[in-house]
Image 1 (cartoon, rainbow, N blue to C red):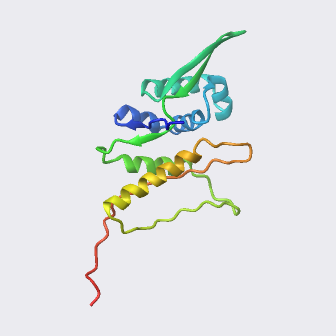
Image 2 (cartoon, helix red, strand yellow):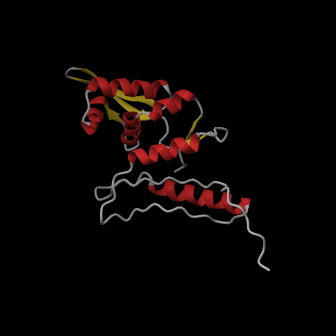
Image 3 (cartoon, rainbow, N blue to C red):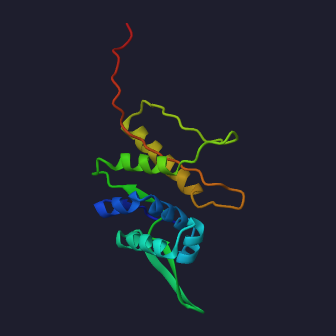
Length: 174
């Protein structure tokens, strides 16, 4: 199965749409599967009008589309889905990394004593070719697991950022 291409975030409308906490949560729900407004409303503990408004903002920004409809007793039920389950920052945008870090911080739950998760900052000394190869390996790892939800799995966030760091270099040891 070929990997679905990531949606490249470019426009201010896209960043604004993802900047609201409820819309960010809606995107995370729709990453699981297409859903109706009622299903989204129940999962979020919100009202249908509020969820409908935020889904419309996501549709207008190009994140969500109508996946299908079906007739039900009270009318027509609409299923919504994400255009793409993965998002990637436009390389030309300078403020994208901060946006993603802020989004990750907003969805982090407090750690439990039995949590395997941890946050670590490490620095590697790599050539450009090594950095490119590492980025490709990380993308493959994430792609292989991102849709593997099962009855005993829990969602864990993974914020990957391979960036050139502003670290001064010491002269060689004498």
